[in-house]
Length: 266
Figure 1 (spheres, rainbow, N blue to C red):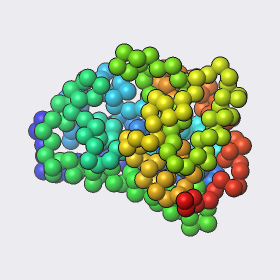
Figure 2 (figure 1 turned 120 degrees about the horizontal axis):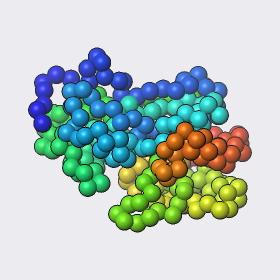
Figure 3 (figure 1 turned 120 degrees about the vertical axis):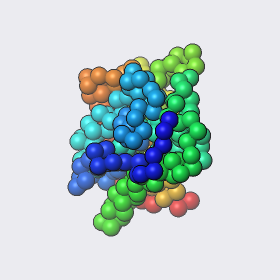
Figure 4 (figure 1 turned 60 degrees about the vertical axis):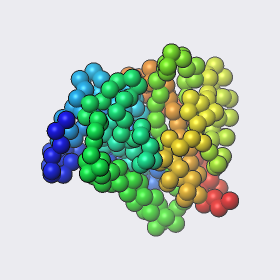
């Protein structure tokens, strides 16, 4: 793939992040790292056909729509990632090779082969860092108003991975801070006894592939949680409406508790 000397993002490219409902009155901040499958024009298609870029390797199918519905319901701001995770994955440590994958779920990504350090730094400087600065700015806005926000990340996962049919409809990912995930698991299971709700399944919040929550939530002592929804359930608007309601109903009492919004220092 031919690299160029100019900036990664041009005037006609989308911004590296999008803010929803910036003046929302709720005390939570929603984030959606993999909301978009956009690729900068300077990178072409990364050598991939359109059908590959539309797959889960390019973005979290349905996650943006679910985030939009929850933002509207709880009147909270949100920060959405502006570019495909194939360009740079904003939910990975910068040293993680899956952050700019040469192979994504068995699909070779030609545009990520032999990327020079200079080109890699452009993706960090023009996409990764501005996205995370936008999250930091939203958190700082809360703090300026003497509010400790809850941080809620919305993701989606594939129904089948490496020939394993995943039984969970929802997964609640967490690490040290149990203030949201434990009551959320309890409410989801109580309100939806027929569902299979994963506790740190199909991924674990204790793994390093959870940068956004680790960096902004856990490190800052904020109440936080990462939500995973199975993609075949939210690949239509009707599905997004249904599962955003299931999640939102479970969140209502938790987010209404004023005792939640405190810095955790232990």
